[in-house]
Length: 179
Image (cartoon, rainbow, N blue to C red; front, side, top):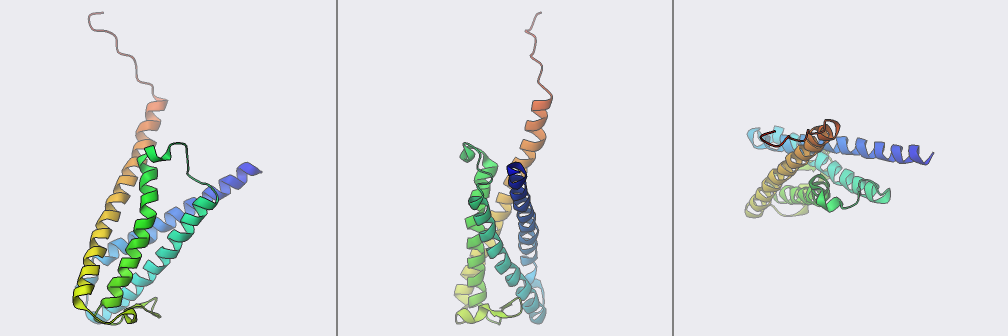
């Protein structure tokens, strides 16, 4: 029974992981195109983008809590495995990205309503200079997150396809030269 309980906890963690991949990927990729639209369309897209960002914030907090509460994914010497280090660095960076995005929405020069109802743009007075700084930080953090996702994906790919194959197919010992 204990094994199936642990397995179900890992299954929940996997579902949360892939849900995070989808919504974070959506927001990272959709954010780049926002400036290319007319203002009215941009407002609708920002409502979606900021709403999804809010969802990401709470999803990441829940994922973090779930993993810690159930002691999942903490193998011995986890800090020596790049994919685990990237995962633990990723959580605070994603949360920070959402807070920076909140700063973007707070200082923007028009109304931003998360999910169409949360008035993020009313948190502060319009200020183009501060808005520009937050937007620049938001863009830089997005690139950092994309880089970390790529490193994490490559490392997981390497451990699955290269390390596992090396264990299955042992390397032959080379015969000494001149034999």
